[in-house]
Image (cartoon, rainbow, N blue to C red; front, top):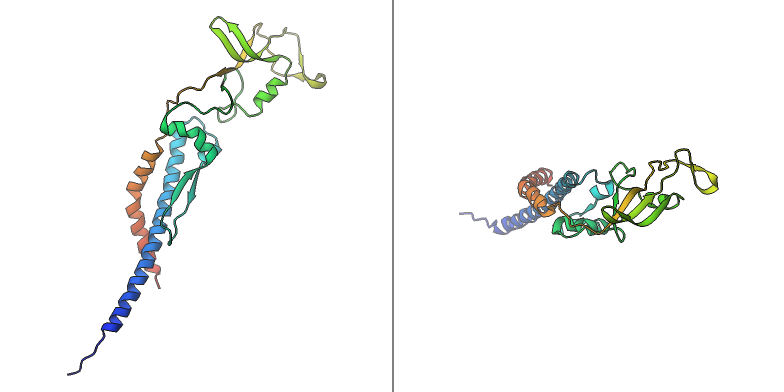
Length: 220
């Protein structure tokens, strides 16, 4: 009777298959994590657009991704420091984070395409001779802000060099352009955590199955 001992060869091939399978699994894990992480970012961007009225691109693109790798199967979604500072109250609650000492509440001034006060607006207003900043005693109480003095209907407001300025106030009374106030409590919520969990729960298993199928099909 002929006996062949093939155990060593089968063990070797088994180890090779196991090693190759582990590579495929590690690759599929990293691929699935990165695919789902990018889907989470897209969902969070849509969430930001639904919560805020015309958010600026800087706010919409505030999320970054540290991608997963085969050796480190962890995908990290992070928010850029500057954006995280003023968006934190919308996740955790609390008062608005103000860019300066007071909340700027535009009243009678043109806003940008995102519905916000342009950065250069305050400096431009300060340079006008018909503008002053400070408190005014009104019927509703003391109001602190940026005010525009009224001029006669035929008068012209001139800036540096005698250049006539547009937008003169000819209403016959002071015009409140921007009101200063204290930080208000945030009323809206972003719910970043809930959005991310919803996407991960729905997409991680299918994404891993798809990535594993691709890895197996291209395995050598």
